[in-house]
Length: 128
Image 1 (cartoon, rainbow, N blue to C red):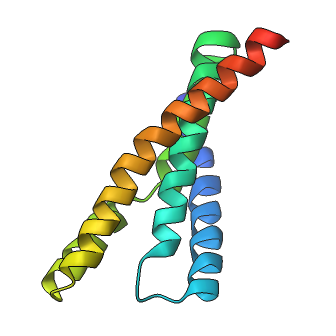
Image 2: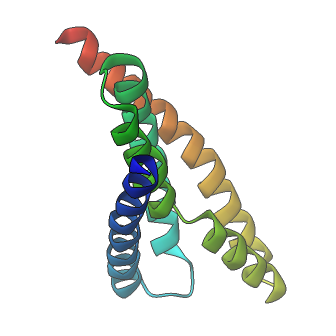
């Protein structure tokens, strides 16, 4: 029951952060390209790489808290279901170049940022 509560509370926080960040980016850059979702997904990838290293390999924290952060918060923060729908919509609307750019930036950028986050956390924990 504690784990379920941790995931639920983390999910609430992640959802609210996703909504606020994605909306802010969309208001600043328009909505013809899903920049808000892209920023959220790439930020989430950076955070999950960084926090995975810290919470799974360096800091021994309560597994329930770790689950609340990694699965609850970050699971709700990243928006790959929105990514799938927006990619589909771009393809459906004949925007082949935009859909290809979006898929490439999300996937390649996400993997690179997971690695960077992991390496940043690793470098910080080695020097401290």
